[in-house]
Length: 571
Image 1 (cartoon, rainbow, N blue to C red):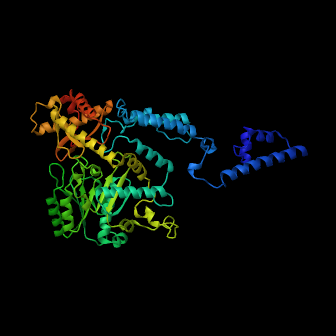
Image 2 (image 1 turned 60 degrees about the vertical axis):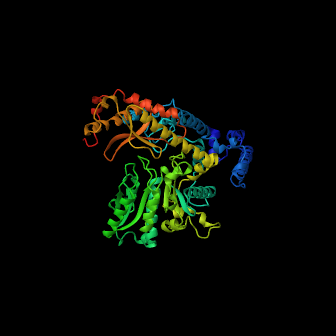
Image 3 (image 1 turned 90 degrees about the horizontal axis):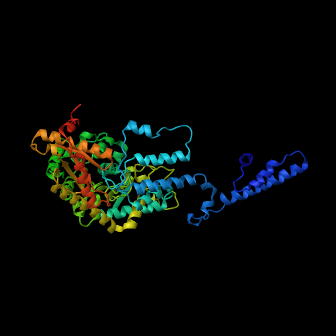
């Protein structure tokens, strides 16, 4: 303890020999001889300390690749063992076990039960490393595992090791993608990836950026359309004095359009919902009718949001017809391709987005069908170079100094609405390097093949019925248990009972941890399952297991079981 005290009092680095510190503390300065020895030892310590400080702090830095003897660096020794132990858990629990079919998709507990077995409380005192490692393992134990091949609940699933490495490396840098000054490699990386995505869509020129999710990307489209129409005055004066501006989107579109309208001051009443056909595609004739109606009321139609891959049915709006209408009425065409945009990576399926190159902007989430770790969402802009900067710039001089020593066009931070911006390009860039376009194409084709195989198996199986033929990799279907199969299917009574089936089976699959599949009602249709194929590791055997497992979970259902489920309109 006394040696430690000596180091603390004299600010002695750990590299100074303990023997010297011990000799210093053993002296009693009672006479001239001891005083001389004390002085000599003190000078010896301070000389060694200064040399160490000069070597480590004031020496000329070298590149990270030239640093040697990392294991001996004292700065790494404090938490190094914890980090090694934690990474072992992350790899074992989060990669190996999470991706194993033998692992449950979730170890489900009710909220009160989970609070009883998991230590959520935050305290004033620090926890031990052992406690932290146990909490890390418990987090994996009780969390949903989207990497599991039996997870089909959302538009994202699976786990890509190249993307995972890119994600981990990104977090190790803890950088922000707003200036070339602080993120030179990542800024150029984002330029390259955005350029490739634009070219894949068919935009020969333009701009783009990675943003925090598809909802924000859709809002970028709305804001830029408004700025393009009214210029800098809309930025400085807002909506005051303008006529009512109208946004059009399909009745099957994502709710982010309405949220964006509310957030940006248009109001949700300014969002007109366009009717769709039986497969969920926007009807161009209804769009034209509603545009003419708004004009006759003195409103200004300015923005059409088309959807390529709707959330439930996976429908693709007819882009060429919508582009014709937008050009005729001088309106901005934005495509929400957050889900279905990845279809353009496949030569077999890119026809689903025919006409996308005519749109003005597009939102595309690579963390969905392309399997990039969350989050990775691109906003892409055709032509209009400089529009994003003019619409969003604030010219903060502490970040975007005009007298910088490099080309400031690489400082992307002032063209977005964020300040700090997580680096999302690296993991996608690394996956492109690892797979190439052809690798991504193969994975997209696998997902589509699985969806078509599943649809055909549903048609062949007793008790299963498709809601609609799949267009994307969404497969929507009902399971009809034996207790309902003798009923007249064309009655309200049957539909009422059928709507109670999916909630019961969902509860059973989650509590047993065997599957996770979402369900919902839609436009008068009773609850049905929406199965999403976005994991390239899913096989035809997995597809057939799904049918068998749902039948196992629901085969014994009785009307008494179903009667316990409240209808949506029940209190």
